[in-house]
Length: 253
Image (tube, rainbow, N blue to C red; front, side, top):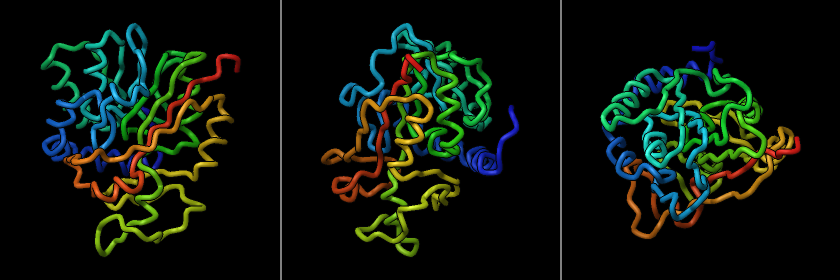
């Protein structure tokens, strides 16, 4: 595994310690609703952000227990799962082998993926490395990994959950409690180091590295939605707690 920076070392230590409990709590639902996004498991068939992947080379950048990649392997794609947590990858291997999928699983950093330039048609993640790695490093790294015209799709938390978080009540609220400008590396409150950017900074970063923005999908909790993550559905019906960036690499760059 490549040498990783302090925030990745911190996050790897967290996930190695937490992976068994995480999969015990969430793994069954993640497997049952594998082709779905975010805490509310909104189906890809409804959002259509990943698109047709049949015959394509995919990289899941922070695959956890591999539920997404294993499902896409069954759809005729050629996915590879990357994660820096060896314990998460242990669960991914068990999931893969239980259904006899053929997904390669690689231990490595999302900021320095051990693959050759232009190896993939699609790079994606659902609250994976794009949540826990420095986007100033991951965005150019994804640009390196993608072939011209390749797709980059990732779901992560919006800034609003962090900006409205009340430590004493341990929940998102209706009041802004932290400054938006200057948001970057943040304490998730759950043990991980997370990354956020103001929207203008995201757009400039994408453009700087040759990406074209196709869509920004702000996820809304469906009526009557349930989640294993303990998020407040009423809050997430009023304000977006999660979002999906959909981009492609300009083939003329």
